[in-house]
Amino acid sequence: MKALILYRSHYGNTKEVAEVMAGEVKRLGHEALIQDLRLRLPELTDVDLVMIGAPTRMARVTWKAYRALRRLRRKDFGNKPVAVFDTYGPEPADPVKREEDRKWIHPGAAGRLLDKAAELGLNVRAECLRCEVEGMKGPLKKGEKEKAIAFARKLMPGKQKEQKIPKVKGKSKKEKVRKKGRQGITKKGKGQYIKARALKKKARPVRIIKKKR
Ligand SMILES: Cc1cc2nc3c(=O)[nH]c(=O)nc-3n(C[C@H](O)[C@H](O)[C@H](O)COP(=O)(O)O)c2cc1C
Image 1 (cartoon, rainbow, N blue to C red):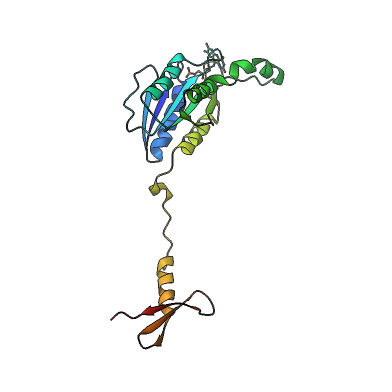
Image 2 (image 1 turned 30 degrees about the vertical axis):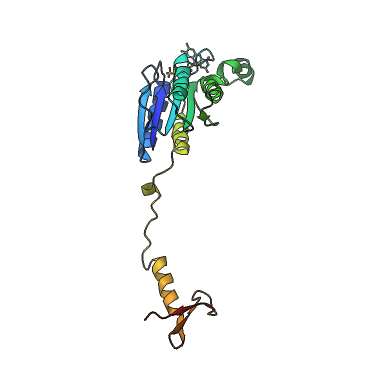
């Protein structure tokens, strides 16, 4: 699979999130192309998934991210998945202040991108990634990069080599079954063999096999 990760970043926080996700996509054995939203959208024919992210500024999202979503639709990205992410914050620790500031933080850039993508009819993933920063210009809070890694993992299937089952010493399960199966075949009469269920304590005939001549 190939993922295209588009981002806009003023102080490097959103770019960092994009890079962390690109790294995880590659680690899972896929291709990742990462690009600034200010640049022209690349060729999309071999792209399987697009992630778009931007910072939340004045409770809004850059128009360049909206433009990219419109282009996805125009370039007929079809029903291929789109995921959105943003950076925001910092959220005040005091609950009263937090409630007062709510409109600046939620739904944030990611929420706005999600709404826009849905409005355009794109196959946008309902769950978005939101990474919080410590100060108005960053850096990312502790644990936010891990959130980004987990998000990328949810979007990309692991390739077979990652799911390799470790070899167990001794006889393989297949070999054991084959052997037991062979033991279970008993001769019935002239040219006829009965295949019994070897795994059961009491052998039970299940099939009559004609001997090949
Ligand atoms: C001018 C300015 C306005 C901001 N406005 C908001 C805001 O309305 N809501 C919010 O949650 N964060 C706001 N922030 C914090 C940014 O979202 C945060 O720093 C973000 O991580 C910046 O991302 P970037 O480094 O990729 O540009 C603002 C930051 C700046 C500098």
